[in-house]
Length: 264
Image (cartoon, rainbow, N blue to C red; front, side):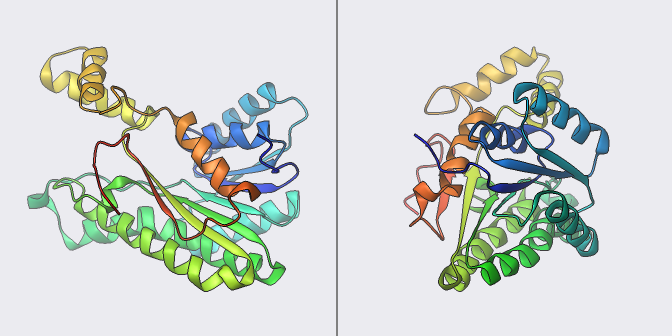
């Protein structure tokens, strides 16, 4: 299926690795132009090189920025639009809150979680959704996480940020739909990324098993018998960002392989 994304400028935060990088690969395969934004210039450059190797002639721009800082986020947007033109699609995938046992939580932990996940998204979304509205077209896709739907004792602060992002996504969809802007969110659960790999290694050390055994245990808990790949999350993101999904807005899509059988 042609997703009709050719020549669209897609800005992906957290695009240097994991789900964000998988999204970048998918958008480039569809002929889109991609800007990656992340804090680490080294990983950004490595990501750009790998993408251009996979897609010779593809258009890839990178920008290093700390998106917890509103001014830095705005500067990244200005840099991206100067290099590649107006942003047609924003995919937010940057930022992650630390997991903390409830007895160890302090007010600062809650604030740090909001800064790390919620405000990194707000700082990019706020200026771009307004620019999209002025042009009468645009798409925002927030990659959030199931922690905002299902409370985990070790993910209360981060889960609260995720819940706030879901409300923000639905609210902005209603507010900016009349201006031609669609906003959706995707909630992945366990996904085979570098971050999950680190968690598997820690679990393996804790239980004196191999990392492969730790992955097998995690997979066995999933109704589909395995965890998701970044590419599977990216496939949903690409569709929701495409004109093929032109009447989908305000949707919160759970992607946990049915491990949490929720109705809404």
